[in-house]
Image (cartoon, rainbow over all chains, first blue to last red; front, side, top):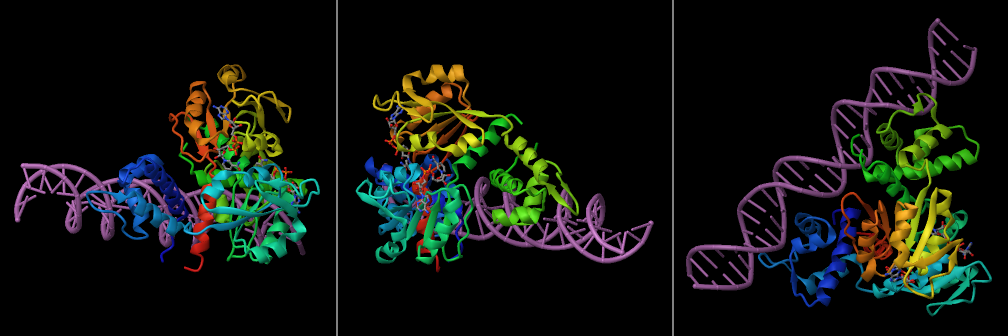
Length: 208
Length: 208
DNA sequence: GTTACTTTGTGAAATCATTCACAAGCACCC
DNA sequence: GGGTGCTTGTGAATGATTTCACAAAGTAAC
Ligand SMILES: NC(=O)c1ccc[n+]([C@@H]2O[C@H](COP(=O)([O-])OP(=O)(O)OC[C@H]3O[C@@H](n4cnc5c(N)ncnc54)[C@H](O)[C@@H]3O)[C@@H](O)[C@H]2O)c1
Ligand SMILES: NC(=O)c1ccc[n+]([C@@H]2O[C@H](COP(=O)([O-])OP(=O)(O)OC[C@H]3O[C@@H](n4cnc5c(N)ncnc54)[C@H](O)[C@@H]3O)[C@@H](O)[C@H]2O)c1
C-alpha cells in the first residue's frame, strides 16, 4: 500500500476515540462533518484520511459508528492486545505503569525493570518491578513487542541497544535525548521540555 | 514576520539542546552538517530553519556554538524564566512537579493545585499543593503564564475555561481529550495513548 | 596575494499534505 | 417511481515544507 502520513494515522486515532464516545451515547451513524468538528479538522480531511484505506461510508447517511470503529481498530492494529514492558520504574515509569488508559486500549504491561534495589520488588498495579538484568530473558519468553523507556538520558541509548538486541519492535522514549535504532524498529519520543519550549515560542511571538 | 512552521520551531529546540552538549564538550564552532546529523535531519534543513530568523553563520567556518545558542534561546523566548503552574497533583502531575528538566530550562513551577484533601498540603520539590479554589487568585497575583494540566479528562475542559478566564497564556494538556480555547491562548496536548497507537500501526504495517 | 578548500544562505524545484468542488450514490417522502 | 436533499469519495488545485544546487564568502596554507 501507498505510504500513509503520520498526521493521518494520528487523526485516525482521534477519530476512533470520538467514535467510541458516540457509541457510548447510543448514536448509530456519524457524518464526516461531525467527526471533523470533534477533532478540529475539516470534513474533507476526514474523508480523505479514510479514503486511503477504503470506502466505509454510505452516501447521504454517513458512517456506521460501530463499523467504522472496528475498521479503524483493525487499521491501527488494535484488534489484538499488545505486550508492553516499562524500563525505568522512577517517577514517570511508575505513573505510566499505573495509567489505566493503556490497558483500556489493549496495551498490557507485562514487565517493569529497574536497576535500583529500592525499586526492585515493588508491585505497580499488579506487576512486580524486576532487575534490569532479567530484561533480556524475560523479553524472549514474554515476546513483548513495545517498550516504554523512562530512564535517565545517559543510559537511554545503551538500554535501547539491549532492547533492540532482544527483539523489541517499537519503543516509546521519554528521555530527552534522540535515540538511534535500526530501521526495522520503530521509535517515537515524547519530549515534554520541548513541548514547553514550543509554548514559550508561541508566547513571545503571539502578536508578531 | 512570516509565519514559522511548528516543525521548524521543534527543530530549533533540538538544535539548542545539541549546541549545549557541544558547548559542554568545549567545541567553539559547529557546521550545519554536524547539527543535522545529531537531529536526524539534513544540513540544508538546518540552514533553511535558521535563515527564517537571520544569518548567524560564517561561510567556510560554520556557526559559533555560544552565539547560536544565545540567538536560539532568544528566538524561542528562553531568555527569561517562565512561571508555570501544575493543575492536578496525581501521578503524572507529581512526576512533572519533581522533574528537574523543566527548571533547568527556565520553567519554574510556582504553584500546584488539586481538589483532593489528601494531596492538598503536600510539598512537591519545595512547592506546596494548594486547593484548586485558590487557583484564580494565585494566578492573578503570581502572573503565571503557562499551565500544565494533569487532571482526569472529565474535568479538563472546565479547568481549562477557568485557567483562560484567569488570564493564562498557554496550556500543556496531558488529558486524552481535545480542549477548546480562545485563539489568544496556545494549547498543546501530550497524548501518550495516541503515541502508542501510532506505534501499533507501525508494527502491523512494517512490511507492507 | 593567490590558490584550494569549506561552508553558508537562498532561490528554484520537487515533494508532500490539505482543501476545494462536484459528480455520484443513497435515503426519505410523497 | 420520481423528486429532493444530504453526504460520500475523489481528482484537481492549492498551499506548505523539504530538498536541491550553486554562487558568494569565508578560511587556511604557502
Ligand atoms: N518526571 C517527569 O515528569 C519527566 C518528564 C519528562 C521527561 N522525563 C524523562 O524521563 C526519564 C525518567 O525520569 P524520572 O523523572 O522518572 O526519573 P527517575 O530518576 O525518577 O527515574 C529513573 C529511573 O530509571 C532507573 N534506572 C537508571 N538506570 C537504569 C538502568 N540501567 N536500567 C533500568 N533502570 C534504570 C532509576 O533507578 C530510576 O528508578 C528521564 O530521562 C527524564 O528526563 C521525566
Ligand atoms: N499516569 C500516566 O502515566 C498518564 C499517562 C498519560 C495521560 N495521563 C492523563 O493525565 C491525567 C492525570 O492522570 P494521573 O494518572 O495523574 O491521574 P491521577 O488520578 O493520579 O491524578 C489526577 C489528579 O487530578 C486531581 N483532580 C481531580 N479533579 C480536580 C480538579 N477539579 N481540580 C484540581 N485537581 C483535580 C485528582 O485529585 C488527582 O490528584 C489524566 O487525564 C490521564 O488520562 C496520565
